[in-house]
Amino acid sequence: MIIKNYWYLATSALPSDYSPLEQDFLSDPLELMRRLASAEGLVLGSWNEGTRLGYVFALGVCIERSTDGARIDWREVDLTLKPSPSGRTHWRSKPFFSFADAVNERYGFADLFAERFPDMDSITFASRRPFPNIPRRLPTIATPGYVYLIRSPYGFKIGKTINMKSRTRLFEVKLPFPITVEHYAWFENYSEAERTLHDTFRAQRLEGEWFDLAPADIAHIQSLGRPATVEELRGL
Image 1 (cartoon, rainbow, N blue to C red):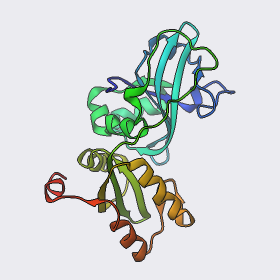
Image 2: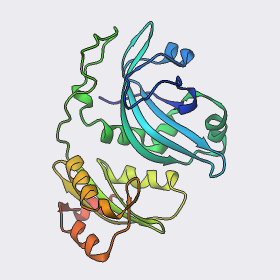
Image 3: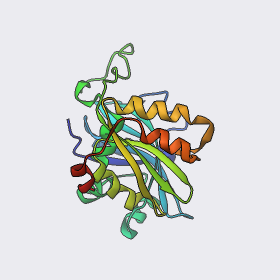
């Protein structure tokens, strides 16, 4: 299933006692609750005026709506987005807003949500409020995709994507510094592969998915998975 509409929600607009990674039922802000529909996406973040960047802490999918609010399946992320000059006004001043279609494509939201919700096609969307004992998330299924390694002046990022071309376009708009794609390879379960690498190099973690890697570490990563084909490399 492809999400067709995405909303930005500022962390400052959340109820003071609400923790998105621990609670799934959201009742405020009321105006957003009136507009939000089942199977729509939420981008939870904040605006930094100093860097003029938007920081995203979680992605959510509305599982169902009711008269009291909405049940959201949240997944933790660590993303930095660079809005256009006109987009900065929205990030700076609005507690929530709906992203335009062109912005959805520029940020690569379809790809980002597919990565964080590999079980999307298994999620049952409903219209009524769930019983308290309904599990918050369904089991994650193995999803094939790429694990990539990029280099920047601030370290190496180990990440995953189902579409390298879309992801490289996203790098151009969300990262405020130059990067180069060092390597990427195909895995039958890219979430497990990424998680294993993050665990392997946890002692060298700088922040989020960024690591301080030595040449031997890079060589080890390059030895894993199926290397990209010539056709795949041409697609970037």
